[in-house]
Image (tube, rainbow, N blue to C red; front, side):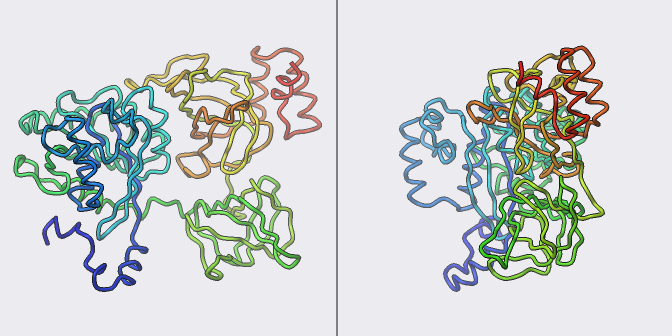
Length: 481
């Protein structure tokens, strides 16, 4: 079967639309992002994927063709980047500013693509786009090789736990399809990937502008015996990426339509849940057993990660929004102090002592930064001393919240190990974090007595920890000031 016929609209559409829709519904979904330096050709690559996969409507193509004549960036050829760069400012500047999402499917998978900005000032947008992706396509311009933004985006992708990386070495046509250029870039990036402990890394030399090795094999690079980008996207194994060991069910809503029914609604973040499972509700520690898993289409015998369900229990215990239901013998951390790697996303720096709102899962609390262990240089991966984090900087930090929250280490469970930091006045997200470990109360007390806080705050901390162990005295000290 030719590559073209492989990716054309399924013939079932014409013969049996119901069968086609059923087949389409059951396809596996792959979420991936494209990232790299500015002008590496990310938007053009996505446009080429859509164009060569026959996934562009005729009216879309006609509109883009007209806009291509106006912009004049590609001569007489269609500027496929315009399929993705929808903002007027993006088209005027020829860059991507915001994260653009596009959707398409092949006979094997459905795809959600996040096209992320290359400019350093929009690094926070890249982190946002990457947060829900399973795979990253990192573009490298064959003319310039591995750049600062290449390293920054690769590092953020590794921090966010993206397990599959495709390094697309673009614009090979400009470098006369040189095998030496490809090998040099591959060697340099491979060394950096080893430092980041990336395991599943694939390399593809291509030209998004003319379509070499995107969907169809290139005749201009006979020395490359690997697969095309589209083949890799269709065939990289993602079945085993989901965490099925740690059952985590964050309660998003308590459903109480009448006196005879009380259910706890949410999306199963990880693990497998079945009726009869013995569970613990955190942070309260109350125990019960699952009675049923209720859905609109009927009760389930088993729920898997990503399924939206309503859980009923055999006991009438107190469960509220923000609580976490877990297996009794397989529990996460419950603590108000933790260490985390943070990507800072706003002009005002992250500083110690200032009050922020934290959203960990569906639980919202107030807290402060108690210290920055190090600021990480994404080029060398060196850890430098720092007293604050500025826009787009990444650091290893310690936080103290005003109440215990439920979490796992991010490397173990991305769904329960991630959090965001929110400005208390504007309600804008200003930072994103990945929890690395819990900090005990004794360690937190040592931080309090290290000279960073006043004698009054230390005494207040001792008093309140004695009578109210779940409160955070540093927060109260900040309020009283």
